[in-house]
Image (tube, rainbow, N blue to C red):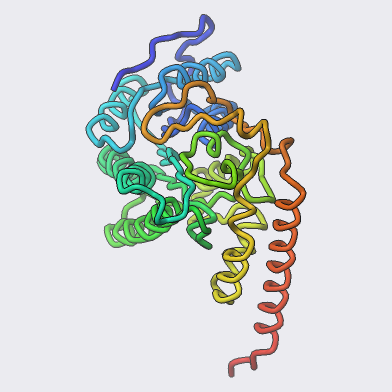
Length: 345
């Protein structure tokens, strides 16, 4: 672990009483967007990620707007390195009030085409990284008996998709882990709150950073694609209003409900349309490729990934529209099923 040293000329520790949030994966995408939101609302921010350059840029964004931020380089799969990064932030700010386990990597390929080391890497970052982060945060929150930990899940934890077996499995494990640890905190009558946020497909560099082994093209988010600001607001609500679980966006809620009420229909929809909806040959998407599974990305550390304007091929958009139509039908049928059940005495 090493702390980034670049300092903005206007930076100064102005408010030592302001709460402190730590965000893993804070150099780009949802993490960077969330860091900006918390800083704008008066929080001091600790950023953790693998890329020193990305962290320095994210930190400078906050400082330019008059916020407070410190950054420390660490890989969340390295428990000791993550603990050292947390200590550097705690030494600077004196405490940690909220911790957001956001760091993640993806790999797009049919399961049988994913190498063992690729599957293991996704698991180590996306699941064990959350375990390491939660352990690190609890060690600092237990003595004060207060704090909030937010674990970032995914819509694919609610409805797994083809081409994403490692990622879906890791995010499903995150959901189960979060609920298990939450019950332990309840048993202990702890005032530490543990929340879970499931984002939808989001316009971030995640898809450019994901590894892939696809004959059809390169990874893309499945429409509809939501702005990262929507997810950041849900994380804010989880921290400040101590939400238990958030399914962000109608698409997430719809897929989750269909999978829960009509799993066979969900299987058929995702099996038929899910693969085409996640792959593109769009030239801009191909040019943006910057795989960052085993190391930090070389250049793409922005909040947004450019998917809002990229669109897709006509066939991909038709497949997405058909899937959405099937989803609406599933929700309608599920609603009819609930209304037709006799009322309990």
